[in-house]
Image (cartoon, rainbow, N blue to C red; front, side):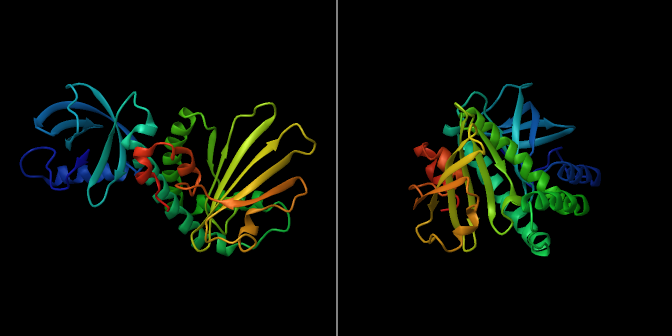
Length: 290
């Protein structure tokens, strides 16, 4: 559903009050936010009036819901025009066009946040001698309380991340985590953790190293061993050489065993494309980082 910047949601010429209300709407709403709106009436074929909050908005719709019906929308953009995507209920997200909208929005906003953190936080920190991940996470939390613009972007990313997690949960793949503090010199640091079965968890970690090289680490954690052990395999871009910068994705712990390296599967280059690549109709839209 698109709301044209030239559309007048009130009829007639726009007053300064109406323009102000539109500006307030943009300040209150964030990209990635889910909104509920109520269908009011049909304007003409392909267009309808919907009520979101206290604003009547003229919207382009693909389907024509009944007046009074409540609808859900995903905010895809606010500038230069407001772009909302109507969400369909009861559809398999893997077979829905909205899947790639969620994923594209999440990846775009995540990359913006990674760039902000790289330029304004990570480069200013030195590697701690002990427990670096705990220190980095503490520094990130402290930084967010002092940088409102970065906090706003972080909130936007986590809101979109929550939507993606709902899809992953529905497809039975486990829990999905964005954890930039684990490897500050990389981008797109994410983890996928399955539910334990007989004390064994499958873990997939994805990172983007310098030069846009994607690396996936896939392995299993044995929770019943003492200490806990992790055996993994590295999946690399064909242009990414093992032993170059991939060493940053490994651990020196004796409880971690590398089972070797292999190329990334065709059509998969990160965790999300690895999960959803089985939807052939959506593959072109999902391979956003190829």
